[in-house]
Image (cartoon, rainbow, N blue to C red; front, side, top):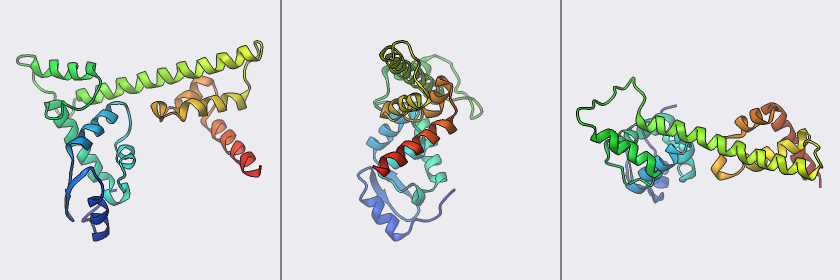
Length: 201
């Protein structure tokens, strides 16, 4: 949901965030470092709200509309080149640079998919495939240790948790469940069961 004016406590909290350069009840100015960090992580497939949260922002105070507007501005700035010092993967920077340098090439309208969104989608696919390969490696190891016996449901869920819990594979749990042939409900049920057993110790 959108938010209106910031109150005094929210303003004081934002002033303490190193990624904020100035703030008043109506607007927030973010550091260039945060804008670049945001675009780097956004291209890796991480959601805008999660990026703000990880950077120490109170996302409830900011509101979803303020975050969405900031994301839209920075995507546009990134594509125009004003944020091209962002530490994004070199191939993505090359694609954006070539797109700007093609003579007579018109920019796509708002209805078209932006280059940033295309790169982000590609990054998400690559991340999921890497996570699936890592899960397969672990499952193969379990099978070998069991002398050819396939891991049971509980072992599969543990392997999914091990892979999906890593920072580089964040957000891949549902995909990994599908790859392993179990439902997300089964996975979370196993997680709750394991947590209860650990708490009982």
